[in-house]
Length: 251
Image (cartoon, rainbow, N blue to C red):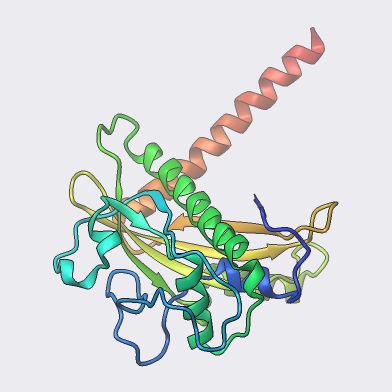
């Protein structure tokens, strides 16, 4: 679960959902094939814009692989070995090009939320990878990002069917966004991770809360092995934890 750093005080009740999505293009824009973001996304104010927005871009903690064609990257991206997030001005321009009218005074906070969720997703990827190779001396790298908000994963579709069959046990929840991340291990192996983004009930102060379901896709032998190892390890750990607890109580 990821608590949202974005205050409830915004004009559009769906603003936090748009903020959580990446400013990827689903039209005819010429895009960077590594992240589907339009090339040379403008840092200039929009013609209908009234507020001055920051053009500062934050460098993520997520290592990236070097692009085969550095011309596909912006100057900011080429100067960093990590992925660089869009600025509030770029984020606003991207959403405007997709037809959204967003509160300009909330753009900086929306970008903060977008970045926060990506960092949380990467943290969970690292947890999975540490189970695969706990002795690794080189951190994995994020090679490619694919946004697929209109494509439900098999798991998300299955949970919706489960809600239909057993609504008392499975909440009616549909992911508002999906990412497929291609991760490169130190061995050069490429592993696809699937991320479903869910909006949960607001916290006690009314701020949005998100749930991230991050897991390796079941499309390679190593991913299936990693999932099985994690599931077995969880059951094994639960068994000993329960046994230890019962001994403690009886003493």
